[in-house]
Length: 204
Image (cartoon, rainbow, N blue to C red; front, side, top):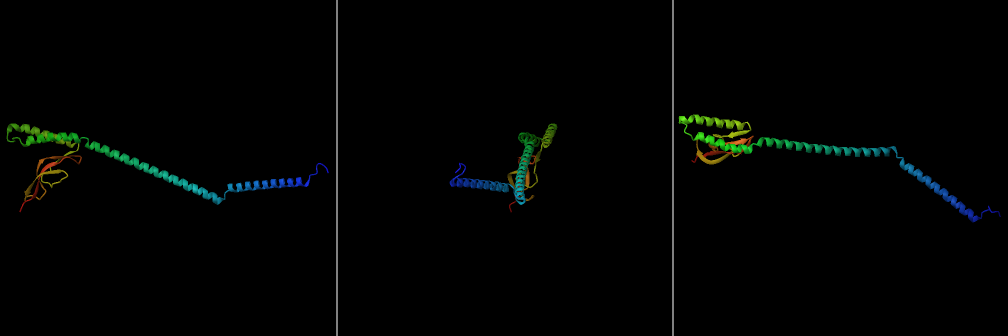
C-alpha cells in the first residue's frame, strides 16, 4: 500500500469535516439572508413607521405650542398686574398727604362758620379765608380729591358716618339732615367719611 492511500477511518473523519463545513456555510448564508430581510422593510411597514414618527413630532410641536401659549399668558398677566399696581400707586400716592391737609381745610371752614359775619372789620379777613379754602379745594381736586357733602341726600354707609339720628316728618327716613363734618374721597376711594345727622320716622 502506498503512503497516499488512507485508511477507511481517516476518510470518514474527512467526510465528516467537509459536511460540517458545508453546514456551517449554509447556516452563515441563511443568517445573512435573514439579516438582510430584516433590514429591508416592506413599503407598508416603512409608511407606518414614518406616520408614527410624524404623529410623535406633531405631539411634540403641540406640547411646545401649549407651553409657549401658557408662558405668553403668564407674561401678559404679570404685565397687567404691574400696570394696575403702577396705576394704583399713581392714584393713591397722595393719600397720606391729603389726609394731613384735611384738618387744615376744616379749621379754615370753621373760622368762617363761627366768625361774626356782621362785623364789617372782619369781612375782608373772612373773604380772604374763604378764597383760601376755595383755592385749597381746587388744588386738591386736581389730584383726585373730592368733597363729600351729602346734605339732603340719602344716607350711604359707604361714604357717611351717622353721628346722630333725628325723628322728622319733613323728609323720608335715612335722609341726611345735617353735615357736621365734610367727607373726602381720593379717586373714588374714601379718605374720610362725612359725619352726619340722619332722619328717622317720627313717633306717632
